[in-house]
Length: 290
Image (tube, rainbow, N blue to C red; front, top):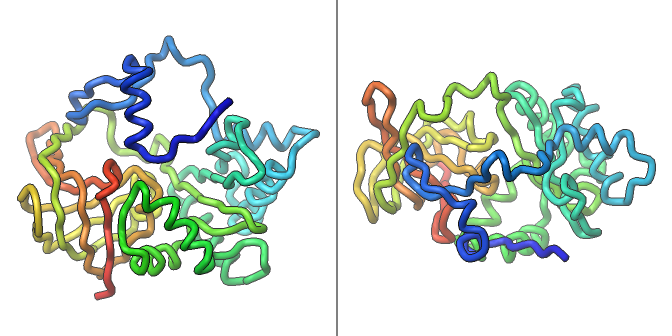
């Protein structure tokens, strides 16, 4: 029997108490991270291969058939080949239920941009199969997420309503994660060192949101002011490895954000500062139009 543990804090407690061998202090990131030794890996689940597997399947259930239909919709609209689209989440590991979401992964910068634009077009066509979240859907989503990321309902609804990476497909929740290909990642492990400095709340202006759809998402900011907590200057970026912070702010908007303040040290000793969101329920980012 399997159960899903949603809050990150609960997941960490389970790992600490039952599987401490999978927690290791990482000197590059200056924190304890979940790491599984290669010799302990029995199977590698790959989202893109899951699509191929389902395409060859003959006895698919309703959830799997809907997931494939959604992937085909993205493929047909964007012309991104199926090999650059994957299925993640519970469907990937065959633990889905009738109420499971469809979690899609797109690979490669240009492919991701094409898929994201296709989602916009599919939603705007209003053909009924792909739709943005309704007010009732957003209230339901808020009940789920607010346990792990706290923010006022009014702000949550306003920000989530304008996102295209998520929504409903034939009445089923979907979320699309956008990842760079490995040859597009300009950083290798150890190229930079990340030093946790404390916890901060800041106010800043978004100068560049072109990385907002990707995981990790990135917002380049200016005019950052530390309102509370650890004071570091200048903070030039806000980032998160959690999908809920994707498409959270747009260029030109002012944001109030709270999270881990971090120093980034390059190999040549050059330093910069950023805010990292998503590790604590108190982490948030709320944007306001310019």
